[in-house]
Length: 168
Ligand SMILES: [Zn+2]
Picture 1 (cartoon, helix red, strand yellow):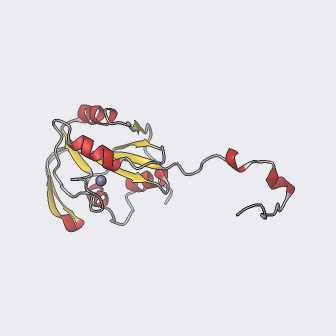
Picture 2 (cartoon, rainbow, N blue to C red; picture 1 turned 90 degrees about the vertical axis):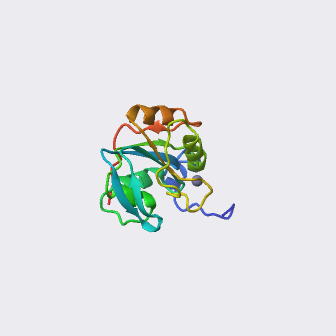
């Protein structure tokens, strides 16, 4: 890189690099699903976990491409890799919230959520093998509590209005 870079064609010089649109937004997300009744689900090496009925919020981030990561979570043809995949194989994610600011907020959001009144942690260690969080998955009672919790986070993610489209 540097001044020695050659201009290959006059056509490529018309658009400065800094003006190119960003093709890969990065940042953090929260995924939401509802379990209409109690389920026992094997979560990889965490073991068989009992999930009470309720609404579940999973916190993650993708610094290599947020849209693609969230779309992957919504795909039903993915291989089981993350703890979140084992859960969504049994009950699909219903909607997503995200904050495409290029930063990792899941380890801020998850502890803040866990510290909130009325929030349960049915699966300690879920998604948090590589950090110090108790869990990246929390449970609340209903959709209203999901909205209040996510809107109350700082910084707060925004709800995606449409389900992500997965390309694979
Ligand atoms: Zn964490």
